[in-house]
Every structure is written in structure tokens, then in C-alpha cells.
Picture 1 (cartoon, rainbow, N blue to C red):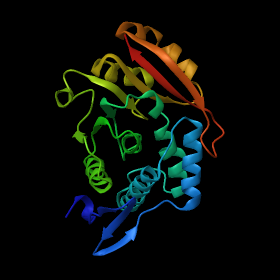
Picture 2 (cartoon, rainbow, N blue to C red; picture 1 turned 90 degrees about the vertical axis):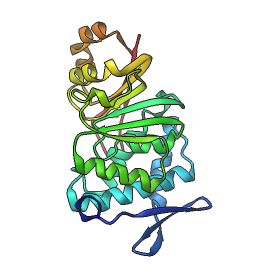
Picture 3 (cartoon, helix red, strand yellow; picture 1 turned 45 degrees about the vertical axis):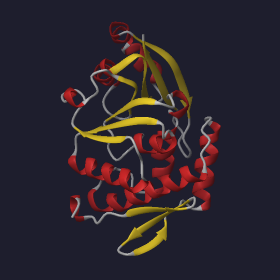
Length: 248
């Protein structure tokens, strides 16, 4: 029996439809019409064109996350609407700044944000998901199996300590969402980038202050700011920022 006594679901594909198989019974795992419309519309505003197959896989992942979260508290948000608006959509926004092929390290993957939504959309990238909590690595492995994601590896460890688990040659991109303050995030992640690689960080409304605080650190580590993108999530009043840093 998997972690926490949760029986795994299996995924099967029939044409373009993803089907859940649980306890011998099959049922469609889909986002409802309103959910699909919101996710697709907002993503398109950020130059992300989601196909039906992407939305089917996102729905499958979302259903499984909610099922596990009821049992073992993987995330602090329990409303399906808030998970979609505050976590899922937010996770997709780095996509236009990432390469279509190569390697990506997601640090502090938690329950899969932003890594799983990004991998569903960017299937050509080889993903490494690093997470320190066993219950979350168990869920990540199940989500990867269920959605049929290829070239996706879960690493059980901490980026500041377990560097032996990471690619010695570095990554083309690193993502970090709610890992630590910006200084620690940059210090831990920048050394694992290839030259020309990108570090994508999520920041709140005071992104300019955070960047001023780390200006000396950026220079020391050979990092430069290439993008600071402000945005608002549905139902949120405070502006957020996506920060893209590049290794010289």
C-alpha cells in the first residue's frame, strides 16, 4: 500500500480523453467547463496556448492532489477554486521563459507547483523535482505515474545539502516557488545553472525591494536580471512578479 494508505489511481488514454481507473471503476477526470475556460483564457493572456490534452492532464493532477490533500495536508489551500487560481495558473506563467528542450530543476517541489503543470505543458524538457518531505515525494511520484509524464524524476533531498543528487553539469533552468527568501533561493540555485541558464523566482508586490537587497549577491554569482513581469491572479488584489535571472 502506498504512503498514507492511499490506493493509487491508474490513468489510461482513449483517443484524447484521460480516464481514471479506481477500484475497478472508470470515470472521466476532467475540469468542468468553467474551470477549463478560466485556465485557458488566463493562460492565453500570458502567451500560453493550452490544448485539450493539457487541460485533461491538469484536471487529472488536480483531482488526485485534492484527494491526497484531504488525507495528509499537502498544501494549505483546500478550496478547489483557490487551488486553480492561486497555484495552478500561477505555476504555468514561467512557461514562455523556459526552453522547450534541455533540463530543468524544480527546487522545493512540494505538491508539484510549479513543476507538474509546467511539465504537462513543456513535455520536451527533462524535469528533476527536488523535495525534502517523504509524503510529498510519494505524492509527486504518484502524480507523475497518473498523468503519464515522461523524463520526470523525483529527488528526495534539500538543494542546500544534497548536491550529490543533482546534475554535475548543471541545468538549463531552475524554478523555485516559495522555497526561502530571495537571497537564499539565489545562493542555493544559481550554482546549479549552466552558463546562459535561467533561474525563475516568484515574488510578491515588493519585488523591486527584494531585488535591490540582492544586487551585490547577483553580481557575485554572475547573475543578471532579464525579466521582471508583474501580474495579477484571479480574485487577488495584490500584484505578484515573476523574476527571470540569467547566469552570465
